[in-house]
Amino acid sequence: MGIGSFIKKQFIDVLQWNEDTEGVLAWRYPMQDFEIQNGGMLTVRESQMAVFVNEGQIADVFGPGNHKLTTQTLPVLTNLKNWDKLFASPFKSDVYFFSTRIQTGRKWGTVQPITIRDKDFDMIRVRAFGMYSYRIADPRKFFSEISGTRETYTRDDVEEQLRGITLATMASSLGGANVSFLDMAANQSLMAQQIKIELLKSFEKYGVGLDEFNVASVSLPEELQAALDERISAGMKGGLSADKMAGFTKYQVASSIPLAAQNEGGLAGLGAGLAAGVGFGQVLTQGMAGAMAPAMPVVAAPAAPVEEPIEARLEKLKGLLDKGLISTSDYDSAKTELLKKLVG
Image (cartoon, rainbow, N blue to C red; front, side, top):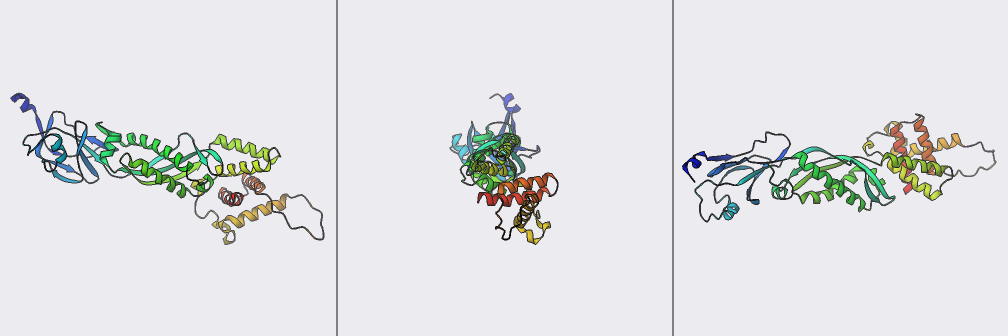
């Protein structure tokens, strides 16, 4: 190398990353014509890791702290470079910094409905939304499987891949859980827990750690809801058998249970006598039955009253809601109780 080329060379004494750009998860130190000084310092801040890469092959990994770069601190790179003894001259190596801080409040959702197999309803299509948080847990895997040799790799880049992993895992997890959609819809924490167990395994393959995962809402597509409403209406008019009508009714009710509506105090205003919605459902359905039943002749010994079918109670309950006689929260609570009786 000529003396002119040597003079043009620039040497690095300190390697560090200030993370001055929001949302960047992986950053390659700009080497260009730079070389790293023997004995130079590597500064890795808290919530960071640094990786030395030689010709595409991962060498040494460093956690937070100040590290003096010698053959003792770079054992793998020393072997790859065939430095049998102490090296005394500057050297070149790609250096990547990774942010390991937790990325909080990230949203996930199904752009299109996904099809899952359900214990009660066979095959259904659902939409779901929620939030999650994650972090880079293993920079070796993350580099090899996701970020690669790009100069920067952002949060948006990785979340495009995580979204696909989440939806695929959600479909397989719910489909193989042997727990009905209805049961999970009534308890979004159960659904989130089931999905998170599988997501932990899927994310780990890519060096990503899943910190939190929750399901905020789940629903059936509007067109499916409309079709089921029509079929249930036909069943009420005698167009369907009792068994089919019951099945469609269960399906329709499941589609309308809002996970996000598990708010406290929904029935508290009705008094302790209506706790858990049981008393409220009985009062409403019995009251509607008495108000809408045709006049009956008075007999000396009236027969014991026959409990009205739950499907009919649901229909009347919906009528009260449409007329504004009951609130949406009271309607949802009473409907959930009736549903539990319906599916046993």
